[in-house]
Length: 203
Picture 1 (spheres, helix red, strand yellow):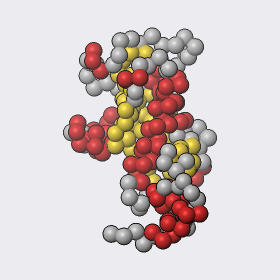
Picture 2 (cartoon, one colour):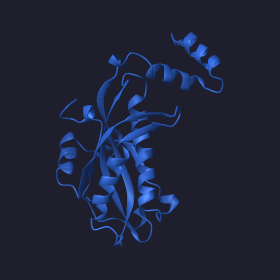
Picture 3 (cartoon, helix red, strand yellow):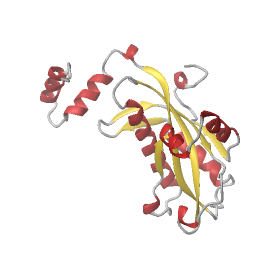
């Protein structure tokens, strides 16, 4: 189906040499009536590795540090394709292991950790794949924050993320299972200093 905004998009591209079709499309969407944007939440599963020997510079457990650094990385997210920045809020729950870890699940000197991340933003959620785009933006910010906190984590063990619905389907988790896992975490944190209108009790 032809995009009804194609003439507008082409005109924008002509006026801004170097801007791709998708960049022009997204920026036109961003400039649209903000009343079409709503505050919603997207959830994803974040997995990484934590050091078995905690840094003595930190008094908190690695799981607590992980929750805090991932939550605060979401304060301002960036859409890589367009350079657009937008405020967000995240709630991060670091899960208790459901079984003993296998040796191949983390590099030597590290152990695996998993978290649920719920990220909220005011976005055009009806746009195609906007939920996945927000998850990607939040994942990229979290990955970079973890790399700054633990720069010794080998590159081949870069943190990974997947839509929470997909992970739940693969693991056979029901909604009740997700709630149970989130009720007794090893660490939990929410974004500090987030845009007030994005907080769950406000929106």
